[in-house]
Length: 427
Image (tube, rainbow, N blue to C red; front, side):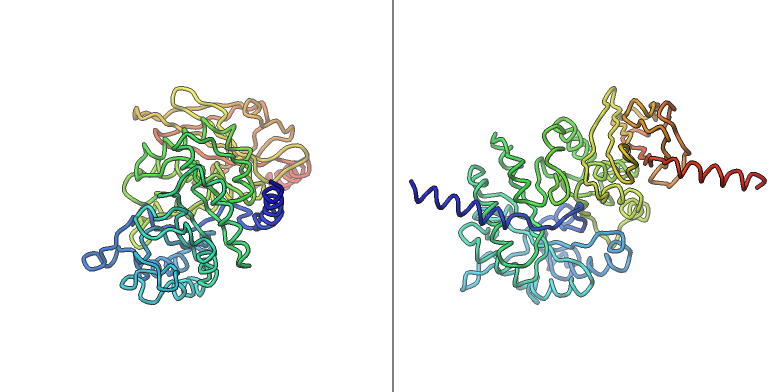
C-alpha cells in the first residue's frame, strides 16, 4: 500500500509538470484530410485523391500560395489510413510505402520547409478506426518516433480502446510526448468515447492533459450534422464553457465548408458558430477545387479574429426561441469593466423566409455608457454606434447567420470622433 501511494505521488508530481506544454494559446488552425478524403487508399484508380504524400504536399503548397497560411491556418495534418498494416521489425510505426515512398520524416520536412507545422494521427487503442496499428502497448516508442519525425501536432483517436482506461492512457501518452522535449499540440478524442459508453468525463482533468478534445459525434457533410453539433454545444454549455480557454479547447470537429453538403448561408453559419465557440479551425476540403465564395468564408479575417481573440472565451447561447438563436462571446478590446463582444444571430428555421430579429443591447449584456461601434463581420459593413438602450435589427436567412462585433467605445474615442465630425462638417 505504501509503495502504491508513493508511486501515485511521484506520478502526480512528474505528470503535473509535464502535462502543461504551453501550446495552443489560441485555437489551433489548419487542414485535416479526414472529412473530405476519408480512407481512400486506392492510388491506382484514384491517384489524385488517395491518402498519399502527393496529396499532402499539394495541400501544403496551396496553403502557402493561396493565403491560408497568412490567414492563420498553419498546420497540415495526417488523419487515418496513412499507415502500413504492420510495424517495422524494430517495432516502430511506418507509413504505407507505396503511398508515402519518401517516408513521414521527409513529408514533415517538406511541410516545415513551407513554413507550416506537421500533424500526426494515431489511436490510443490496439488499432486505428481504419484498422491500422494503434499505439497501445507502444506508447513510449511512438512518442519518441513522433518527435524524431518532427511532428508538431498529434490527434489521438480512441477506437479499439477501453474508455474506462482512457483516464490513465491519454494522460500517460501526453506526458510521454512532453518528455521527448519536442513541443507537440495534443488533440484528444477521450471525452467523446467515454460519453458514448455512459461515462461522465472529468473535463477539469482533461483540460490539464489535452490542448483540445472532441466531445460529440463526428461531423458529416450536411447541415443536419452541423446543426446537431451546435445544439449539443448550446444544451451543454454550462459544462463546456468553464473548461475552455487558452491552451485547452472544446473541439466540435472539422470545418466542412467548400465540400458538397452546405449552402452558402450554411457555410457562413458554420464559420460564425465555430468562431464564437472558440473552436479549433481545421478545414477539411479539397483546396485545389474550392469555389471562390467558400474560400472567402474560410479566409474572412474579421471572423477569424473573433475565433483567435486572446481572451479565449467560448461563446454562450443567450436566446433560443422559434428556431432563432443569439450567441455572444466576449472579446478584446476591453474598457474598464466592459468588454467588446461578438454576437451571432443564428436562424435554424428552414421555412424559406428570412427572419427579422431585434434586440436592445442592454438586454444581451452590452451596458457600456459610451456605447459600441457595431460592424457586420462577413461583409465588413460598419453599422454605426449604438448605446445600451438602442435597438439593433438584423434580417437572418434560413439556416444562416448575421455576425456582428460590438466594439466598446471610450470617452476619448467619442471625443475624437466628435472633433473629426466637426472639423469635416463641410465635407
